[in-house]
Image (cartoon, rainbow, N blue to C red; front, side, top):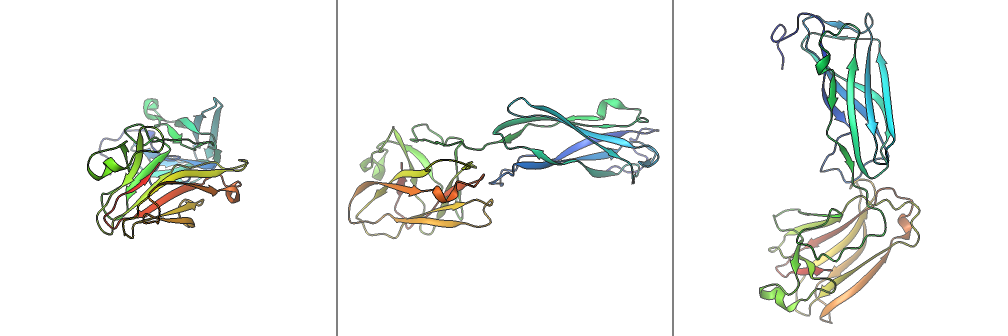
Length: 284
């Protein structure tokens, strides 16, 4: 925190220090189609700044993934920013961010009495929307999960991971159904892991279907996987189906789950939540 009088310009000097939104949050499952644009402005001058006496403009230039170039500006005409202090200012309440890809964002503050112009502008890191368009097809043949999927351990470090066809040890008896790889979850007793998709834009998709293969074993065990969806960023989850590793037949079985009920959702996330009782589970 700046202390009044230390390293401050003798006159007026406003600077943009932070873009607070839109920014990417790795914990955020869903991103709305519209986002406010907000910045933090710091007064690095020794003089208090009175916006009623000398208004300022706060502006943003956003180039979206399809090349649309838009400038937003708001005039601030009330309030005071004391020397060495900072405050947040909303430039626009709802900027469209519905297209997948990178948004290049530049933000700045304009003042007729600011004597130090070089720190008035901030070139922010790109804001990235990773919406997944239908159809999606992945046979897990690459060494790492594609950008369409993420995996996390809920109570241990064990997660869903890609292994190559006919791996070592007990995996050597399981061959992938498609491609050269498959997903495996092998945790200790009580381990829980989630494999989940990115944000899927389902709006207007005709006859959507989730189709995958799950490996069953006749060996006794309580290992299972719940297939769930959320369309409100994880606040609520809906169970679609539960699969148990133990079955009367050994081998891969295809499952098809109708997703037609969700064709009005702009953010559908599909989750495979698995509980381990020592035995490995496989998906392809």
